[in-house]
Image 1 (spheres, one colour):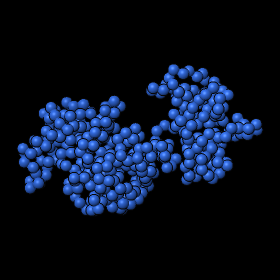
Image 2 (cartoon, helix red, strand yellow):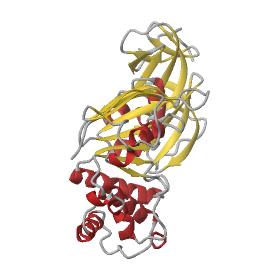
Image 3 (cartoon, one colour):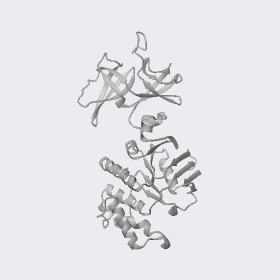
Image 4 (cartoon, helix red, strand yellow):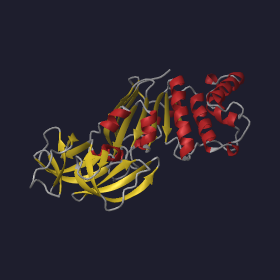
Length: 365
């Protein structure tokens, strides 16, 4: 059985410091997979622990299908929790670890030993560790231990599954493999799932919806496409993926870097200081004299399958992605075009287009 989770105006303060959570509200649908994404200190793990019952909120409510979950003892809340460090019992075999939650139930609620053995065998098959039941955690790889931890969480047939940085201790290749596996597993089991991560790629690949948090507050909630393509705030744009952050002066809808107009807002924005964000894959370079702004190459480096070039326009520095076979000498003049950018002026965030062609005497470089 899956449930809806409602987080209503939840706040948490430790001691006399700033709030770890400041009136956070969130609705999670039954069977939904939701990522809590944000930098360290954003409050995402604190929120997860409150839902689990491992922390008490300073105020606010947590509801499961409309019923108060905070008044229910942790062991009866129906929570499966997977920790980053696995938290497996080293002296127990894999099968004993998975069975632990079932054998710990009160006698009246405990399944028979035959039922427990069947449940454990089914779960180990589900997490692709069917032949590993007799091994100990020390005999497993990190990825295998994490699968055992997930099987143990699923053994109690939880209403809600919570995962705290589930792949944070694993290397990049194993993380990628387990992300795909976890998404497929979720689609089969359909648990209402909340997972914490600081890895943007992980959240975008896994989640039905992403909750971007910062300084104890929710900055934006949306689908992976929403939060990446339409960030609501400068903080979200700066955190989601790689981008160039340019301090500009907004005048008449134009974003000025020094005296150079580098972008034009598609909607009315107030004049004054602003921030322009642009991702490297949204910057195009061309030969001098072709459409675009006059720029100069300042440096470059290999970045996986592409080459990343740093280019200066009117004193503003951008990064652009080009083919790895292209060599652009440092100091070379190039035409720079921002194919897609977003301008944040005050609390306003608007899309941008290339500025109008410069006329003699306009915003000279």
